[in-house]
Image 1 (cartoon, rainbow, N blue to C red):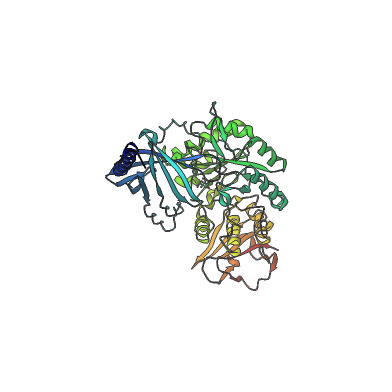
Image 2 (image 1 turned 90 degrees about the vertical axis):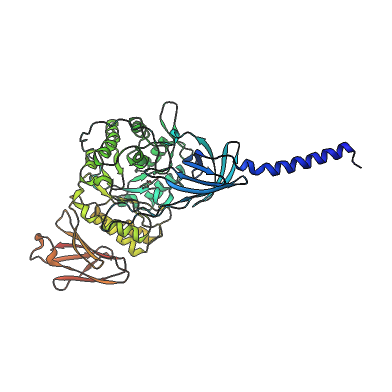
Length: 528
Ligand code: GLA
């Protein structure tokens, strides 16, 4: 039997519970209007976070807002009801690519969906990413905190001297295409080991380049620091050097890199010194968030890249300088070289798909005459061996990049290469075209219904000729000997198939071949 006192406590508890339950929707009416910083852990378990700024406007249970991206934000819609928050972005449709343009084509943006609750002034959120469910939290910030920093003054333009490096297009490996954020000290060491044991280093590949996501922040003295995936950059560089290889690193002129990590903004000289002290031999410098601060016209981009170009030269360490600006402001027409660049990206990012490689590769022929010794067009890194294309397509990739004298930066897992991948990446006769010591630009001999015939003159008077089939069925291609340069006039020809590794007999005045879908026949022709 309960006493009266006990009974009244039970009733009191019951009323309190009912009251709290009844007023709970009021808590849901907390006004979320304002600016928020969503801090999401970066994939790869490196302990770093990515900031995403949003502005929310609440009207009853309805939420509207903006994901603050520059140059223009992305709309957000959602609801806040009974303590549960739901937000999703409304990605804009991708812009239609201009026919024949080499400008970067952006893939459609992914819809971001966040679900969560409001607790003690914070939003606890979960979202679905490519790598699974991500838990993040958001805190209120001021509008000013969401804005990029004020532009720092840029130095007056001056033409930097040639650093004497990259006399032929750089060859090496980079972590991004295969591993993105899943790269660490141990795997870079393993890649250096595999570069040697697979024969890649003998074939000419020398740079082991760490791409984005190695960064942490800055120490008390403003020195850039690496995150826990890379405990000791100097020791890693020593290891790579001990294998007879060179090591590259990545940064951005902006405050943040493209993956949202620490960039070199306002610390260019200091970072150049740090990289030199670590023993870095190659820097990929990726525009990313600097685009939010400065205009992207040629003089501004030149000044931005000159800042790091000069800082690297002042270290007196030979560092190959790789500009990554997605082909903006016609970098190939002069400012890339003037700012000290040894190579510059001419396009948006490649992906491991035929459509991407085909569109990028064949759009480059008209730029070939802008490249020169020490200053190369970079149509992005190789995807060979990553599994998204057929062997014929990868042979096209390798042949085309070599005819273009593009940097050969492998982007696959060097520890697990099939014999076929090895035979493509290490085809010495094809590499010799890429690395020809006297650069002469590739020219288009003919381009007809998806059949492209390209020719490049080589230092020994011979030519490389590629017959490419961009169509989706096998097709006949031909090359007439009348298209050969004047030094061939009246001479008998030696013709060699560089993928078959065999001589070819030519009957009559023209060479004909059936080229497989998306494939290539690559010839070296010399006068006898
Ligand atoms: C940009 C570059 C890529 C890669 C990523 C890293 O997209 O173009 O090559 O470096 O950034 O975040």
